[in-house]
Image (cartoon, rainbow, N blue to C red; front, side, top):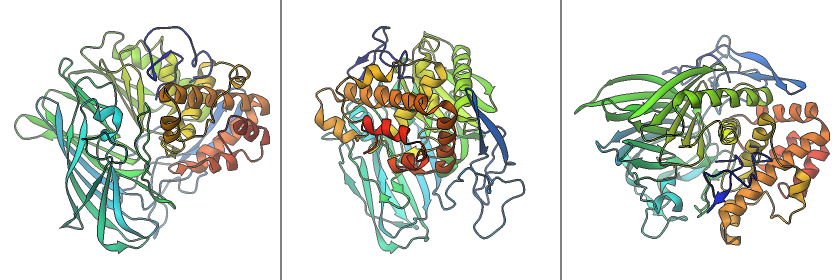
Length: 521
């Protein structure tokens, strides 16, 4: 989420300037070309290529390409980058078809998800996460309720498990026992129907505004909770402002949003056309070869578009937003992206969707999409840069945001600091008695009276500063080369702290700094 140096109020940065904790210190916080999805093979088609990543004074060679898959039993498509240095998407990744039908008042939606799942371990159940039922969103009036499940065409029983949901709310965990256990490599198809309620004026990822005539929802469908080589993720939702989700990449074969005609619809991935729907609606379609999540916004939005470094960036601003218009946002996104690309390489998505909402005050990232609040993007440059940095950290290289939040938040804050040239010194922050950076979201919720503020100050600010300090100790060239290898090796996967240790194994000073702050054990 946010990292731009503004003060925290109940764990969320306030609108007023002052007490610059991060962006003036550490909160320092793509591939170009198009990647259409082949409907028959699920393969993104684009010629592979290589680029040079310039990290300040250094040049690091990394490989890039479309998030594509190559059939196991055939040769790589002509011009593919399957043999490049960059890890490719999981060939057996889930295939998801998702449909939302919006209510006329934009206060709710009915949903249907079809997912083809091929596990790499034996399993006797399916597990989905219903993240709109976490405390921050459920207490604000949003919810996701599963109404039915079918497995391979037959009705299936399911169990709704609270897993951290507030009392009276649907659970954040849905378990579906299988009639027959599934062996690794076998495929099962599940169809899940669900109802989504959008709370009014929610300062979070799922909500609606009748005044602005807009709805927004992300991570708002039953999210398959599988991690390769580990199995099902069941960690509880916690009352801490931040993310707790984890997901492998999936092929978003089709995202359909049925909305009243005349409204703008922002989605995830590439536009796949529109067609008239029933009763004065329009069906909007999107598709993406490899994403971990889906974000949607529907309503009376002013939309502007620009190509930034080969990525199509679309910004939609709701009618109650007053701080800046879509072109102002595009200007800052372009500026912030430039510094990040110098450090990390091209944006890993061909399409980026940004919605600016009068009901929000900060920023929330998703793979290929961002929600921002009604702020001045130039004054809140650190916020913009931080959320964009998540396209690499969590979007491209995933992690369990509940168990190891530092793996995306500390790295995004680090990238923000380097790209913007701002951030407090490590020496200043390390002198304080801080908790370990590497703790889980459950730890922050259980151990502190103000968990969100402590989490933010430690994981974002101290964690980001530690990475900046490590880079300075070993030199930019060596650090950036190891970072490029980390990104290339772990693209399209879910990392753990051991993957950071492996990437920086030849730079013991880096590992030493991360151990000093408790990011690594």
